[in-house]
Length: 312
Length: 257
Image (cartoon, rainbow over all chains, first blue to last red; front, side, top):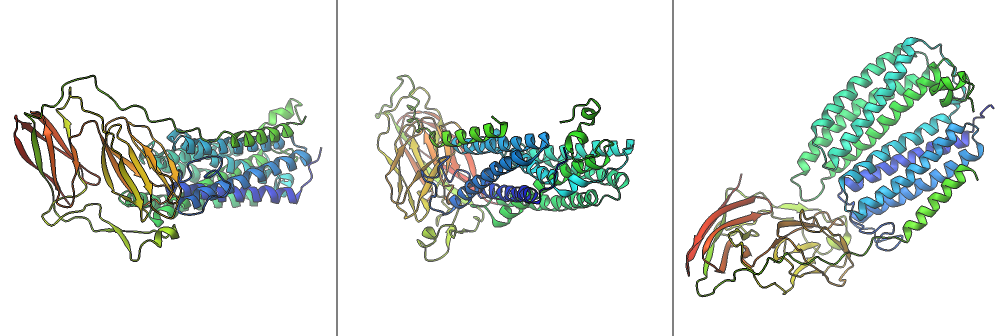
C-alpha cells in the first residue's frame, strides 16, 4: 500500500522532537542548578499542581510541566500515527516512543523519591537522549524526503558506510552514557575524554565514507555536514563545561557559566546522537538496493524481509 | 483492541495510579546506637582538655551570594550577602571547627541527650552553619523566613531525608542515629544554603566560636585521639594522654594556602 505524505503529521512529529529538546534543556538545568530535590514529592509538587515558583522549584517544576507536555504530545503522535500510518513498523516505533516516555516519567519520579540514586539518574539522562532520537527519527520517517527518496545502487562500499554510520551513532550513545556517568558522579572524566576521542575519529571517518558513498544526496550531505559541525561544537562546549565544572567545585552555589555550558553541552550531545542516527537511517534509505518504495525502514533495514516475502 | 489504544490506556492507568501513590511517609528515626552497658565516668578523677584551633595564612576572601532566585530571600538583606567559609578571630582563632574525641572512649556509656538543638533558617541562611549534636539528640528545624525551604541532609552512614517546610511553618524534629562528622545539609530551593551537622556518640565535643577556643570537661583519664574538623580545611588530629584530675591544653593549627 502506498504511504501518502502527510505534512501535518510530519510537522507534528518535528514539533514533538523540538519540545523534547526543550525538555532535555530543562532537565539539564535541574541537574546543573542542583535543583533535583527542590520539590521533595512526586508526582505532585508540594502536594499541588502548581507550587510557589521560587529558587530551585522553578527548574524542577518547569521540567515536570514540559515533561507533561511532551507526554501528551507523544500520546497525540501515537493516536495520529495509529490512525493514518500504513507502515506497521512506524506504528510500532510510535508505541515504543510512548512506552519510553512513560518509563522516563517513572524514572524521573524515582530520582526524586530515592534522592537521586546514581544508576537511576544516569538511566534517566540516557533514556532522554534515546527518546529524543526516536522522536527525531519518527519526524524523518514521516517526511516527504523519506517517502520519495530515490535509491542509489547498492555497493559494497555503501554497505560498509551504512555499517560504519551505525557504529558511529552507537559510539555517540556510549559517549553520552559516559558523560551522564561523569555528571552524576559515578565515573571520572577520563572515560568521557576517551569517548570524545573515539567519537571524533568515528564521525570523521564516517564523513569521509559518506562523501564517497552518497555524494549527490542532499539530505545525506546536510546531515553529514551537520554532524561534523555538531561534533566540533560539542568538543569546544565539552572543554568549556569541564573547565566550568572544575571551577564550580569550590563555589558556594552553581556558577552561571557552569550551568549554561553544561546544559549547552548536554543539548548539543543530544543533537549529535540524533543527527548521527538520522544520517545512518538516511543512508539506509537511499543505498539499500531493495529500498525502492516508501516502506522505508523495514525494507531498508531488513531487506531480507522482502526476499522472504515478509512484507507488511 | 488495537495496540495503540492499549498503550494509551496503560499510560493513563500509570499516570493516575502514580497520583495516588506519592512518597510514602518518612519512617521514624531509628534508635541511636546504644553500646552495651559499660564504664561510666567517675567525676572524682575526671579532667579537662582545653585549647585553641588556629588558622595561619591568608583566609580566602568572603564569597558573595546571589539570592535573586527568590525575591523573598533577596528582600531580607539590604546590602550584598557574603559568606566566609574560613572565619577567623583577632588572635588567629578559627571559628566553626568541631573538636571532638575521636578515639579513646570505647567501653564507656553516657546518658542520652534529650535536649533539642535548634537549626534555624533565617535570612535564607542556616543558623548556625555548623552544629554538633549527640547521636539520637533531637534537632529542631525552624523556618523563620517568609519563604518555603527544603531541608536535605546528605549523610554517608545515617538515613538521608528531604522535607519541605512552609514559610514560618511547623518545626521539623528529627535526629541521627549514628556518629558522622559531619553531615552536609542543603536547601535545594536555595542552593547557597549550606549547613553541617556533626553527630557524635558521646558528650565530648564543641564547636569553636570566633576565638577558636574549646574545652572538653569531665573526661575520664585515658589516651585520646582528638580530631578537629572544618568544613573547608578538612581534619587534623592529635593524641592526648590525660591523667586523673589533669588539665591539658592542646593547639590545633590549620594551614591556609
